Image 1 (tube, rainbow, N blue to C red):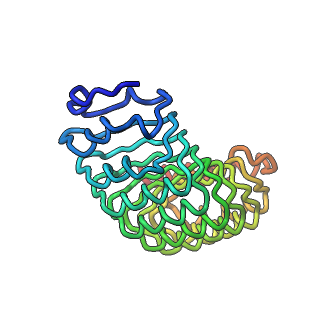
Image 2 (image 1 turned 90 degrees about the horizontal axis):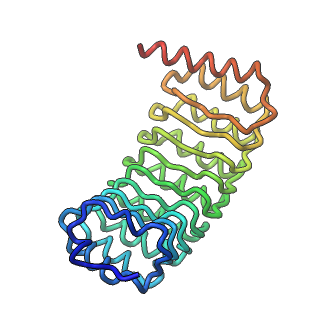
Length: 266
């Protein structure tokens, strides 16, 4: 696909390059745009074949001073590409929303991204679903969350952090004061991990919503979460759908608690 610099450089939002099968060596005109544009705010490159292995796109992102939302989900970004992007995030000061879900970043790539976000104080929303992240990667993320004060939303949907990863995240939530939304859907979390998260929720003051759907939580873990909601009135939403062994009575108790929280705010 031929990219037209003169046309692209005028765009405030570039969204027509999604789902085009683009690979890294076809991006030279776009890279020039990213480096020179004074108006580009949104760049959507999802569903392509980008790896970021050659550093060119990442280097351009590091130099850019206008992009606020960068969408790279459903590409072929591996740990090496993630490292290059992490290096860019250490320098970029404008990107607020970053979509990286459904790549192949893995724990090694997450290590680099998490280290970058210890330095970066601009990014507010980060999507990392479906990236083969295990408890090791969750530990890197947790260490970052313990010191980062700009991220407001993070999604780890569809990874495999398990109970140990959930415990690491829970520990970070005891000290984090910026995260308002966290998604841990589909991460093989059982009652053990739910209990650790519940303990964190009792003390966290920033969180407003948590998605724990699609895990392996039963009444035992849900009971702990309900108890946490009784003491933390800041939580407005907790999603537990897809945990098939939670009783209807306990689901109702949680719903009633959350409804009471909403009424308090009115």
